[in-house]
Length: 292
Image (tube, rainbow, N blue to C red; front, side):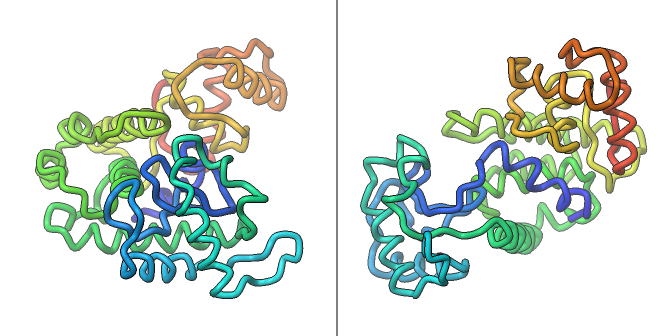
């Protein structure tokens, strides 16, 4: 993958998945942690594991360095196994979100450096599997936005996702067609936002390639609130959801950017001076910018 995709990966995913340093169940009942990292090899949604699935899951969980809360000492394999079993046994809490699994229900945690290490380990693994598939053999030469959107799909679905129409489009570098076929379900929660972002980035990939712009750079479109939110996140104006909604938090972060850069503080994401200021700073970081 292009270095720009790797550099942007956590900025892109953190608002979607959140950063959770304990084990929890996702909406499908899979034990997860970090930034949407599944550590559960159970094959069926919302199901108890077979003994073999549990063994494989504990192996996945043990790839992280777990620390005991308060003591901050490294957890033993038995403590990690007990934690995984405890979380998996509370399937009734899965629909309630990750906060339902915070201490004292859970007793172990991973630190931020370990979360980041594991995120990039999983990202590299996914890319390795994805690029063995014939339709993705040219992945290294794709525009950065197309790489980002496809890896985003992998993050949610796994790198072997079977989307024949999508696969056909990317094999022929038809990014507009791929944008029309990247949607996946269940279309709830942050998956709604991920679907919208994946589509937007595939359309940006088309613009980059058609206009002969640098394919190794991430492109952002500042003509809409999605792009402005992405720009603000890139420049460190957090916490902020990249949800395409011009709500109070977005206006607040726009105002913060305006204040930090000596601009009129009107909170408007489409203010010309604000867009120009965002574009200038993004360009300095190696982004391609549209909508200025």
